[in-house]
Image 1 (spheres, rainbow, N blue to C red):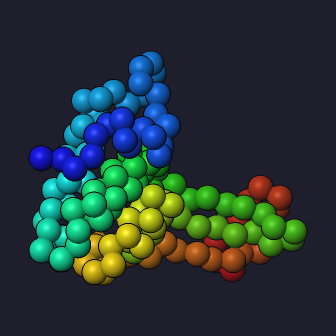
Image 2: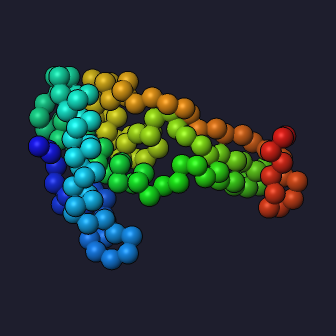
Length: 139
């Protein structure tokens, strides 16, 4: 059984309740269920208090809701002064990608949540521009 409610998640992450692109309570409930299973499986025997497990689950649910809408395959280009930066791809831990995931990691003083989430780090490359809107990917 989930430790948090849709209303509690909405308090830290305002989510439209109806309309296009919104998240209804059924969708949010499914996300909360995933967060609950992860917290229970990874942290259930970590010796954390019930209140701490609820806090982690709350921020993990907000994190999952946030990344649900993101396009992780996208490459983003940004110009700073005369330097272009290009970044994108997958992250080592999706939890590091949002402030909610970062908060969940901080709240888990056992460190088990961080150890359970692995993968690839995002690629980051500084490149020289070939034109104002084109990036030379070989530089």
